[in-house]
Structure formats: C-alpha cells, structure tokens
Length: 603
Image (cartoon, rainbow, N blue to C red):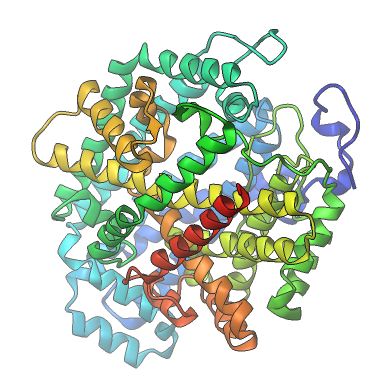
C-alpha cells in the first residue's frame, strides 16, 4: 500500500482503515474503558486491606501480590488505550481528558500500594524465603521478592514510602515545565528555504533543515534555533538544575552514594558498566575524528561545522520505498531468525498492529507500545524512503520482543527493562543492513547504506555517550554542592563537543546551549542505555549471522525472558557480557572498518 496522494495533511477519518491500528483490541468502545476505569477505582481501596498483615502468612502475601498484579494490569490497559487514542489526534479533547484521568489513576495506585515493599522488608529475610518454600504458588514471585529484598538498604518506612509516592506527580514538575515551554510556548523565527522562501522553523522540522544540501539553510536553521533557546538560557538552567536536584534528593533520601548509582541499582547494573562505556568510547574517539574528516572532504568544505553533521554525504538512492515493499524487505532481512519469529512478524503486519500514515494532529515520530493480554502496537508516520524502512524494522523489533515476552511470562515479568529494550529494535536494523548490503550491486547504494550505519553509530553510540557523560558531570556537581548556572552547563556541553568531535570540527558557539533542548535529560541516566543496547544488538546480530540456529535459539530465549531476570544476566545468556568493554569495542571496530571503506571509496 502507498500513502494517499493528497496535497494537505489528511484528517484521521480520511485514512484507509487497513493502515490504522486496531485499538478496539484493547477496548471495543470508550464505554468499556469507562467500565474498567470504574472497576479500577473500586479495586484500589482493597489493596489497603493487606496493610499490617501482608507478611502475616504466605497466603496473605500471595493474596496481596495477586491483587497488586490485577490492579496494575487493569490500569496499564486503561493508560495505554487512553494515551494511544490521544496520539491518534492530539486535538481530540475527549482523549486528552481520558489520558489525564489515567495518569492520575497511576499515581493513586502507586500511593495505595506504597506500604507493600516496606512491609515485606520489615519481615526477616529468612521468613520471606520460608514463605516461598511453604507455598508453591509463591514460587512465581521468587525473583520479584528477591529483587525487593535487594532494596532493603534503600527502602523507608511504610509512611515515608507513601509520602514519597505522593511526591512523584509533583516531582514531574521540571519535565512538565520543560515540555510546555519547549513544545507549546517556544516559537522560532522563520528561516529561508533553498528557494529563498520564508518557512517556519520548528523542532519537528529542524533535522530536515540540517539535512539540506544548501549550507546556508543548515546554518540559518542551526543558528536560529539555538539562539532562540539562548534567549531563555537562565530559565532552561533553572528547570534543568531543579530536575538534577530532584534526582539527587531521591538518591539521598534512599541512601545511595549518588543519583547515578541509584539509577543503576534499579536494573542491578554495576557502576563499572557506565564508566566502561565512557572510557571505551573515549579510546575510540580517533575513529570518529577520521569519520569527520571523511565528511569534510566529501562535502568539499574548508571548515566542517556542527550544522554540517546531518546533511547526507552520500546521496540517497533515488527510489521510493512503498510501505508494502518495506514490509516485504524487512521480512526477508529477518529470515535468519526462522519461522517462529517470522510467524509473529507476519501477524503484526497483517493484524493491524501498526498505525502507518501521518494524519492531522497525530503524534510525531514512532514507537511500539501495548498492554499485557493483547498484542503490541506500533505508531509510525511512514514516508516512502529507506530511512523509514529502517524505522519499521526498529519498531517491529520492539513489538516482537513484547509479543514473545508476554507469551512466555506472567504479568509480573512480562515487562522488560529499558536497558534491554533497545536491543531487539537495533538488532533488526543490523540484520536489515546486512541484508541490503548483501543484495545490492550498485556502488552508490552500498555507500549510502554504509554511511547509514556510520550515522547510526555516530548518533547512538558516540552522541548518546557524550550526553551520558554530561549527565554524570552535572549530577556530580550538584552532589558536590556546586551550582548549575547557565555558564556551567554551557561550558560543560561545549567542552564535550570539542572532545568528542575533535580538532577537525568547528564547534559553533551556539551548540553550548544544546543541553537545554534534550528531553531525555529529564529521565535521568537513560541515554547510556541506547549506546549499550546498540552495542549488544550489533554483537547478537553478528552471532546469528555467523552461528545460525544456536544463536537464534539463544536470541529467541532472550526475547521471551521479559523481566524474569536482571538485564546483565539475560544478555549474558543471549551471548554478550555487558560488564566488559568487548561489545562496545566490537561495535566500534565495525565502525572503523566502514570508515576505512568510505576512505577507500574516495580514491
């Protein structure tokens, strides 16, 4: 199928039904959603009946855990449906309201169940172990309970936990203010496009202008956007500092040495994993500098600026990739995973898991999401090009991961950690790249694909690690009693850009305020997971292509494991050890080989 030829953005009701997702698989109607919302409200007080007696017997503990699962599963479905309906058309007031109500319900549920962990921890550890032994039904919760017991040094009294749970909505203040200022209030002056016409500059269009072949357009977009952020740099710094202080407060309250260690503790990830990533990338910065030199030569520039980093240095193959072709190509690329994986993939392609086309009011970008008990869903805004074909492969990687996880795991372990979430998605991209490189006979197409891979490593491994280092440094300053002034934040970010991109790139002064526009900084210590996940995916994809069936079995077991183990352990079973530098080393070794191929192609 192809996008309908329309000059204006189509409205939601104008889209062919077969290119829309079927959210009726979650709720057949809004009335059914309302019924479950009322049911959830009725269930919430029941969790309180276990207060004070949760660990009095194995049966009470089992009952409390089962009730928590029932409530959580119900609220998850309510929340996912409301948010995805809103994402179909953000101008629809009814779904704005439903989304807000679902968000409040999540907060209320957290507060209602806040006593459970402290009560479990108040019991002697051997008592919890004995309960698991005496009640076979509790064996299901063994990993979950062991993980709770691991939190003992960082858990407060039941009253304090309830109080902290009630602060969570307030703690979202910095992120909420950032989103409103960035996406609702901040306006940019118009710029001139390649034809000299005045066109609006927005966050959504910024990358498109940076990809322009006209250097004046790139420079004008870059300077205009960052100068606009710079006008409010004191406000951005205040918001950013408040967010970092919030992270430090929660870490300090829970008796962690630092906010970084508090964040890593949730996934049982050693601090050395974070440190090894930064150290390994630092050792391989010369490869990035070589790639920057290739970019400079291919663009024919005397001076390579930061606004020159996104414009293609290899012209995209001039052919459209209709959605139907993208579906076929992705399926062929994932063929090495065998019929078990391909059967689920075909179900996703034909079962209306995917919302394919852009429409007026639709949330931009792409994601995969869903709720336990139904299939996952994928939101796209598909454009007919190679880049969007990679996006399809990426998001279906997430979707099939969720599909296998939910099929193999009970609700309590069906969700997987963010640390491993990007593995399945970028794994698919690696197999798609290998497939396309293996079949192309056209040198120009090959170079385009090679450069696509180089850009993925630059933006995911190098750039996200640079952001991870920025987060580590800013949090360390707050924890040392220092202030995050605009000068401090901008100085750190400017210096990191100089370090990472090297002496061959002119670090434009405007980039110093880039920290002000990065939304991921409001989810602390998140971005390093992109770099680690990409590296793990690259290693696993190579194992599947080299070893065949044994590696496929390990990988499918990993997809089905969900959250039944800690991320580092699950990846070790799949075949990669993220506590060592090797996976990142391997990803950057391949990066170096492809840089060499680009250098040789220059003659």
